[in-house]
Image 1 (spheres, rainbow, N blue to C red):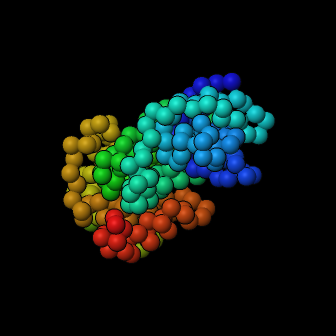
Image 2 (image 1 turned 60 degrees about the vertical axis):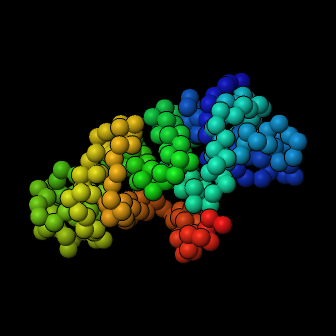
Length: 251
């Protein structure tokens, strides 16, 4: 038996009334557990096992799956579940953690980054929060983009700033050897460096331009796709929302 704080990354149905929940915890990393009766309306586990919920959980170790026995909500993030755009952003963040992190590999920094990113999404700062999360998360995994020299030849990067899907800057001589690449502005390059160097609390003072956010989004989507074996399902949801006018999404 153990007690831990965690964030519900995803859930799936088991039988007629149970759930299997994937929880990212602050002490044990990613854990899969059965929540008995959690789909019943009056069950005490119904609210504490909602996706995105941050709670304090009592768990029992099992051979293949643990059992989530009790839970207490620390922060429900109900405002995220009530807003389609916020929900899409949170789904993307949770899916990134789920697909990149192996079970029971604890990382307190990743837990704090996940929780603080959900708070920023809830506060309406989703666009910037996602870019920060992508870069910080890749950094924590050991996949930090190479910024001080060409990712292909190791030489200095001058003139145009080019970003490769392999995760780093590309010099002019190598631009036709590494594909695809993204041309980014000096402002975007500086933003990447600040995100990687500064603490998350300090980053909230930044107000990046839409151009920088769009350039960084293109770079990180390409880089993350390069690291994954298959497309992320949450991106399909985000792309679907982007096809609709804002009035239709929020209504």
